[in-house]
Figure 1 (cartoon, rainbow, N blue to C red):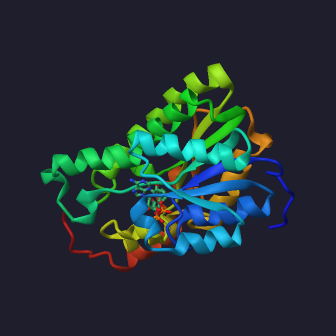
Figure 2: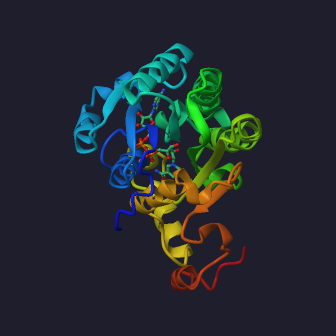
Length: 279
Ligand SMILES: NC(=O)c1ccc[n+]([C@@H]2O[C@H](COP(=O)([O-])OP(=O)(O)OC[C@H]3O[C@@H](n4cnc5c(N)ncnc54)[C@H](O)[C@@H]3O)[C@@H](O)[C@H]2O)c1
């Protein structure tokens, strides 16, 4: 896609680029292409993987480590970002998620509740912390834009998505509620993008991911949206062209969320239909 310099002069923070499959990685490349300046941030443990420093080189940006669950680390991140950028910022990407219950394949009916608290803290409450500290420290310019990444399991049951479903429901709720408060005082807008299944570290960690992925692909008239298309959508939300959009959960899923069944799935189901079946 051509660079229209949609983000020329805009400054931001991009959380969550782990490796080149990450959605945040693609957002960073596109934001750079569109003229933005930003800081890349990730948890200290993710920085050990080192890939993010390659992205920093590609996008002429600095990397600052912060665990999004730690208020003091967010404070340090904002202080350092404002020093590097010479002032306030215009956009934030929250592209962060993790569930120890999913990682350890613990059945949903037997969730470990300490792990569940961790899931909610990292994947949802962290958005509140990112916003709350930013508001208190007055980090985001008026009409700034914050985008978080969600998934349709917040609203419908996807059997193996586990406690990440509750985390995404809470994330979307924080988007709506903080969107009111930050919008009223500073015109800062906050939205979530409900993205198609995407082949990333977090995505493929969900058990049965291939079924999530191909089912959604075959159901959606446009097929699954990939990370690059998601990055394009993020750029529009950071740009001034969407300045009156806030408090929304925006589906970016090739049409999946409006579907019941598709011809492709009917054909596949018909192929394996057992005429003796009685249930
Ligand atoms: N991949 C999918 O199928 C899919 C679909 C819809 C939504 N999402 C969402 O997109 C977002 C990005 O995930 P992704 O798919 O690019 O995978 P990813 O694994 O590349 O990114 C997840 C990121 O979260 C970071 N993270 C985890 N704990 C952290 C902490 N305590 N502090 C700071 N950072 C931390 C990881 O280091 C990693 O960079 C997540 O919110 C995810 O739930 C993903």
